[in-house]
Length: 218
Image (cartoon, rainbow, N blue to C red; front, side, top):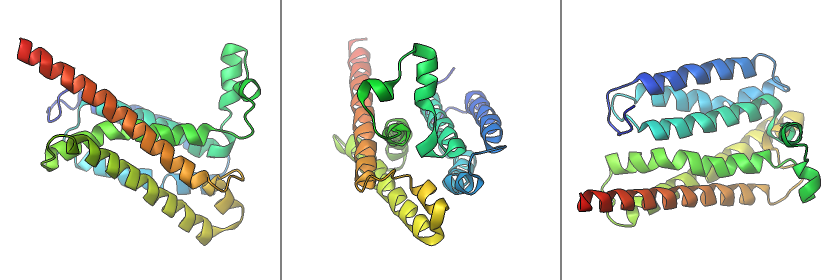
């Protein structure tokens, strides 16, 4: 398996695309709230064609495609149940016999928080490769620009959520916004996306530095 950006081997990304489409269709057959599912998938319907049609111009690494795949699958799970109602604690308890909600004294469903962290963590590798391929970002800017872009996109998404909630209102607006009564929900979500992105670039910077040292020693 080739893990280098720009590789012409499309087998792995095509496999991930096929599996994702199967998962997305399965989770879209009978979602808990059809209108919310449609709203949640608006950006997916825009992003997926962009990835497919942009493949020949910018081929990300297999690791980045895998990270994007994991995020999109997690998003589809959230879209199927609505983020506030994903029964992740019930699944965890069935596997481990322990309820994290009870053990940690959680008062809300934190699946949405985890996905915002995952957004920063799992999208950043592709953004790092995009910035490296399309810009000249020497030194620390190689890492700071991707973090800034991911954080800014997270903020734009919060604005999109707010606008959709205001536009549609009612139960649909509440389900899509998913604040669960937390007035600081948007700020916490943006911070978690930032934190996930920082973790991602830290790992990537360490791995990149290790590879350079090995290449210099070899």
